[in-house]
Image (cartoon, rainbow, N blue to C red; front, side, top):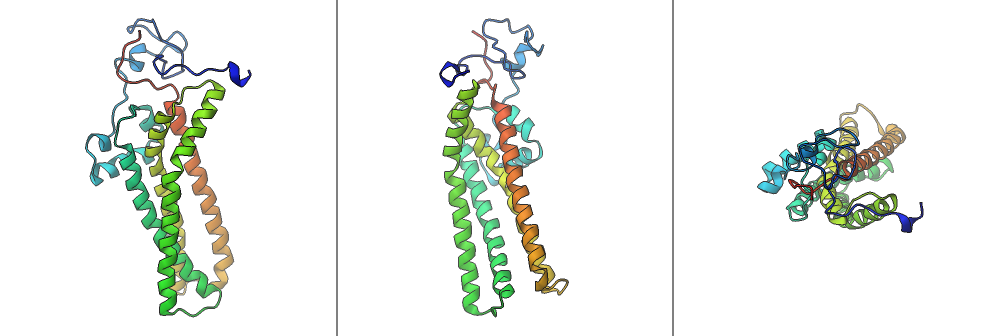
Length: 251
């Protein structure tokens, strides 16, 4: 079907959240004609609600919400209320702050290994440089994490229109704010590899001839981490593709 012939359901159209069937005009007490799911689960008794962080923003509710996103990504986004007004941006900012610290430690440790691996003796100047490298690396990662959401949301919305799905940019952007927390376990895994290798060197368990293996291992972990973040992104988008504003009644 040509792009011009495709159209996404209007934001006011009530969709079955299980299969995407249009429910406008159908009785709430009935079931979806397509999949048999009770209509009320997509309307008046929708499970969608604001997460704990939106209700009361704090570091405590941040970690609680982060745990829910990481442990049950599909379930979290299937119950996420997607009204634009929220504190989701504040959630993403806190995620980026933590991501920056993780990147700082990983970059600093990796730099310290690198200069020793290439035969340079540690000096006070080198220590300062390692800290600077850590700061620069963390700031770059934080900047990318902060700026990338808008273009990703725009591209996702554009692609969804091509396929005839309903993924409005503001809803996608809110979902991405919460999905950003999936970058934390990915970054922590990278830090774990770097810190473990550095510790093994310090205690003489391995020597610098292990460097090539370490770099291959680190590269593999980076690939796995990026794949994990992309997988959680696709799960989030699938979970909100048929989302309605909740609760509501079919017209």
